[in-house]
Length: 394
View 1: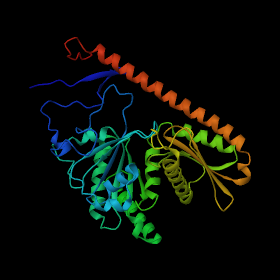
View 2: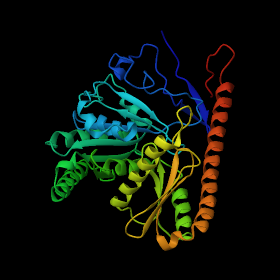
View 3: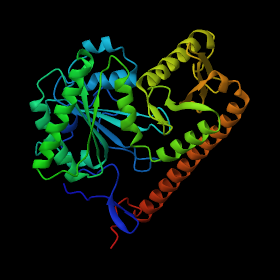
View 4: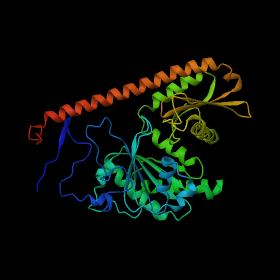
């Protein structure tokens, strides 16, 4: 049976629909290993509503078997205890999960099993890389990583040919058992080998970002924060708003956090200190835990984090931590001196202005998404005749 490829016209050019059309006789078992239930909300991978308000960027988790890919996903996005990940079974099929914790963190995570050869001729790797925003390659730092570096080079070179705009991120994982000197030595060695391989292939223009990570501390959250920030087109606007807010409020450092995942969406232009970031994560946990215990009655339906959420913590070094709700998904966490906190009225007024500006950023983005959706629907309908067949523009 023959079938036609579906097109829409965008800006005068013919572009394939976002869900990538497949012939009726295509083998979908390639994607799900013969099992449509892969522990995700959508059995068939790679398909999305062509009229959805937004095409979510894709983040691929790749690496050799037992490198810790699934554990990273469970700890960051499912709040699983790191110790519980010891009992996770090895992933044996591609699994996709939608992450929509906030209007700024909206993407898909594709977890690839290490044993799958996704460059097999029957496997459409071009479709996978074409819609990818970031490719995270996980390397087990406690294992021999010669094979991992070889697979990294193969993966990066293939992906770059399909989509040069992919952000390539390398997680040097399981560093919790290494000394500080050993961590730096491992990072330097992996960095040198990976970039030398690219230079030998004449691909020096490919940029790899390296992170030391572990699920037993906050390093994995900080690394994922850096990855996600690169996928947020509004990041410069958010950083500028935070800089204006702290400069007019006597605040030393401010983070805009996604409350669910504890990924920070943006921060001001001053450097990020790991200890400061860990304190923010701990503060969010404290706020959520106390709200769950004391904030909700037994018969009350609601969430522990809402528009009334606010917390103040005085540290023993004359520093104050101040948390305020921005949206139902986002929280602003600030660090400031006690003498600056005496002007709390000014800080709250500036926060009100900051929150209003954030809402305007949301509104602009929603308007753009609705306009694109309406434009796609109109162009699609103009090319569709009553019997449902497609009319190709000449």
